[in-house]
Length: 154
Image (cartoon, rainbow, N blue to C red; front, side, top):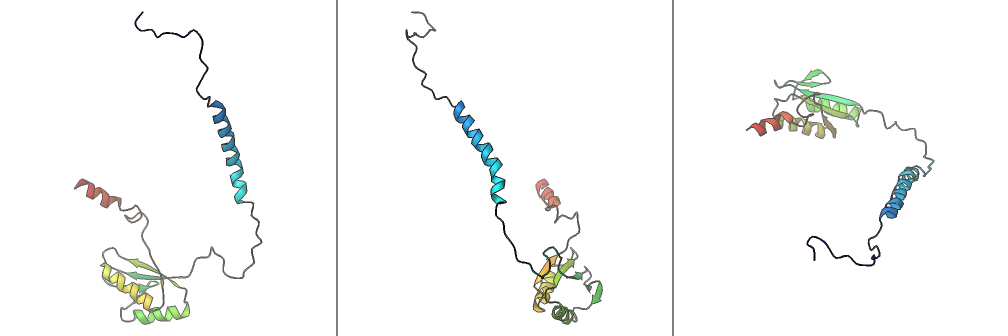
């Protein structure tokens, strides 16, 4: 008996493993068929949509610029206005154009409480569509990367 050798059987045994090559071939063919037919299924629905005389969806709504400087100066569409006159001005604009969008342009040094006060005055006047305007390239647009880097170096 020699070491390192396995005993050999006189007869060859039948191959007992499954040959997966034909299975993989069939699966790839099915995958290609599904990839080619999937886009056709979504575009197969034909609809005759009704016509409308309403405004097109791509049109931008009318906007009102409400600006607040760090010094406390208020502006409506670049015209100065006092805080006492602001509610009546907003009410007049809301009565003229009820779907008016308010774009808040607030200096970053302004306390958040004053921003909330402006938003409350706009909502009391009936202007519920309020958005914030930021300068391009600011930390808000970059996701606050500078603040994240400061926190990482601490």
